[in-house]
Amino acid sequence: MDYGEALDWLMTQTPLFQNTGSKAYKEGLENTFLIDAHTGHPHRLYPTIHIAGTNGKGSVAHTLAAILQASGLRTGLYTSPHLVDFRERIKVDGIPVSKDFVVKFIENNRSFLEPLSPSFFEVTTAMAFSWFADQKADVAVIETGLGGRLDCTNIITPVLSIITNIGYDHTQLLGDTLSKIAAEKAGIIKPHVPAVIGEHCEETAGVFREKAAQVGAPIVFAQDNCKIFSYKQINPGLIVYEASGYPGLKSSLAGRCQPNNANTILTATDILVRSGFTITERDVRKGFSDVCRMTGLAGRWQTLSENPLTICDTGHNSHGFRYIARQLEEMSSAPGFGTLRIVLGMAGDKDISNVLEIIPHNAVYYFTQASVKRAADSRELRSKAMAAGLEGEAWPTVREAYGKALSDSSPNDLIFVGGSTFVVADLLSSMKMTPSN
Image 1: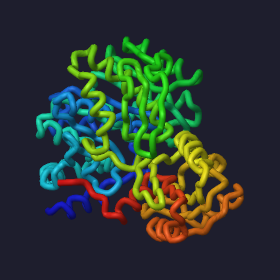
Image 2: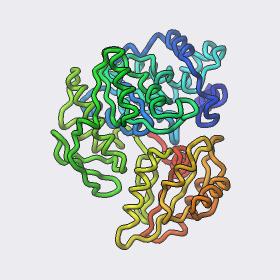
Image 3: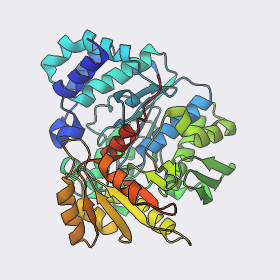
């Protein structure tokens, strides 16, 4: 078996959420416990940090990983989904899992796995935990895939649990109210393990307090103990915070949603220090400023071109798009600005109508669809958008839609590409942006 054959097995023999949606979601942890026992409980060999939430998980996970790397710790990082290469999901010190390990893991465990009919995420989670053990990681930052309580990452006992925020997403699986969704995410809160809640509202705060009280977990609401006094966006790739203990803190993650994430990260860092981690001010500054370079993070308000300015972002639900829409409206109202052009595609199971109500109406749209089965048809998306008062044409691929937006543009225009993680993935793939090693 070579790497291509190993990926083919993963993509075809195990249900993949980006293709099949809810059919790939397996309720319960029975398979996970069986696979974990079979592989020797590798996650017990290193401390872990567990992160859940509707939005911001990736930014928080990657930045914390960068801070821990900067402190000298060999740091594992498990996130999803990948944008270009499967190996982006599993990294140690920013370096993706080796192709050889992917092949050997499947070859060595295939006969055990196939009778279980595991999900894609169950297999890749076990692979990640095993890779971190193989690489003798000092610590690992683990992002949940979906939810928390029944997510297959939830077999770990971390040193810190983080829930970034709660919004409406995957409601068919997690519940149709914020309190129900919060209850699922709160499942990662473990007995006597500190928990950080990044953002909360009246409907969710009580859920988190109740869960923490049940298991005796210390809980901190970052929103109520804000460490960021002010911030200024210098350009699309740089934001500067005035924060407690960190004056002039520079971050390369500059999307409008990032100040809330930054506050969550600083709160979490303080708790890690109190828990015995040696993290200096220099480590925090390096992690914030160099997160993309150190961890390979992509697709978060990422600048792809300067002329015309082209930005992509993986925000894919109404909760996340509120920030994106506000930032696009601010940028397009600047003196001398040309035309806002938006390449938009969404997954068919997302809250499309709510997003269409939020996004800017002063834009030219290029409706498209990603190359995954869950993608909404571009023509149907255009029809819904026109009913919401938006104007544009439909294009069958992201590459064609972006190409048309690019050919239509003048130097003072802004092209934004997003609406779905998979739209961004298709764009980066077409631009041949792949991980190193």
